Length: 358
Length: 265
Image (cartoon, rainbow over all chains, first blue to last red; front, side, top):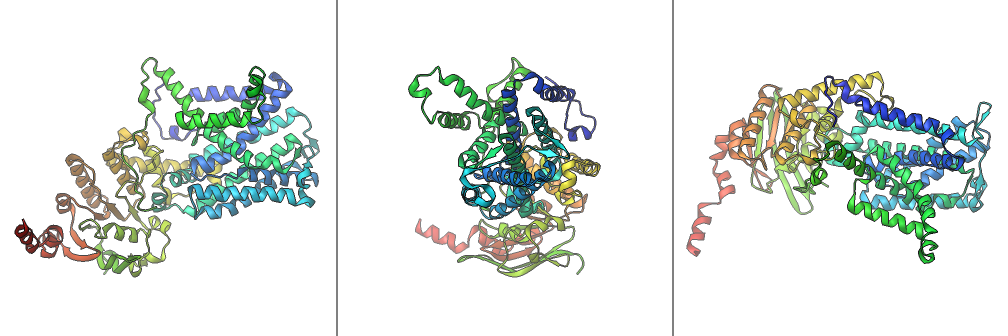
């Protein structure tokens, strides 16, 4: 058990709260930097996908986990970023500029979709974003002159200023750098007034407003940021696959993204990464196991979806705080051994909040 | 008059067929504790919600330091120096007490989105200043013990105090307290009375409150406005209002009511 002796308010502002953080996150960064030499090509590609999904997850976590606005159409933003990147890269734009434009276009779309969020909440917002997702998917399929329609389109390797990223290792480092930057930006926002305003809106709009928080501004900002991050992830996704088609950005992709942050743990940045790891390793685990299962189960067409669904239900029932919540419990158990009590993470719910003002 | 901080003129608000507030006028003087009392459904909280712009009055206007509040959007009210608490506690549940207080500093933020994104030196400095102010309030209200506790795990009495603390963090000139003692035990109510007096006398903050506990009301209030069914019944010092026949009638009924009961029994 670690006791932190606080002597300065700066200690509470720092990202690394104690030497343990510095050590473990330092080790993680070193391991990630060494990954291309440690992992086989296939696993490095999977790790790259984890990073890409983590970027999109950061965006969705900001929106759903920290601002309390759920989007069921986030794959559309992923798609907008991917197609924008593909069109611009194929037109010969350098990678950083194309990426910035893809993120910008996606953020602008987010701004537009965020507008109904000012009026509708909860399940109605879910429906609005869901239908937005369908519309965008349809646009990808029909706007053939730009997107190539259902036949999909190829995208060239990212190139900037005379350097073409053609190897898997190079692209991995590119993704790693962007992921680290996005994570740091997110952590910065969350410890600053902007992030606190998001959290305030999530927990109580009415009192956020009476604390002087401009609800419309922060909700649209959250939507735009979230869509922008999804756009960046989409652009990297397009480069990684080198081929995109409308069906990659359908409702299932949106649900995967949502599943990822719910299983990872809503309201935590760690949860994004744990969720992304889960989302990428789960299909691998299923394919490893399924040959050992009876053919009726192992070869059934909807196996993966069924497993995902079961896992989601299990998490919602037994561990609503997701993988990160589970990890917190395990860590506390280890720290307090043998004094951990079962009810330590139970939240008391002694009264209901007022419904009168909603 | 210059010593009037807030004045409500002929306020009425109608929800469908219900006239929740009917032609209510009152002035709150700078530095006083002004209390609204009245039976349930009298329209006290509705008056609060009119001042904090959650509702818009059907007719009438509210003047605050020479500005018409009815022209302001709801989120601008805190910036004008009006902070409030809620009857049923509206805290940010999944954040720590300190975090809640820092959200109270929102109107004093000096950094924008981009500075926050890169957490520049300006943001760092502003954060430290906000923390200093929050710590002042923590000291005043004895919340040191709960600083890093999640609100969701706090007992009701402490949440009430945290909400008061959050309102104080905005550095208001006018503090709206919606039933500060509801749900508190005798001891906590005494503390609350003590703090309200402190807030008025030490910090010079004008307090407008809705309250049912008459001992608290008479202990801290300078003036009291009694309402019933959306209308003003009486206004004056706590003693004057408590002895006002119309107020007694609204709370207890008339002698006739009682005698009619007797006869039927």
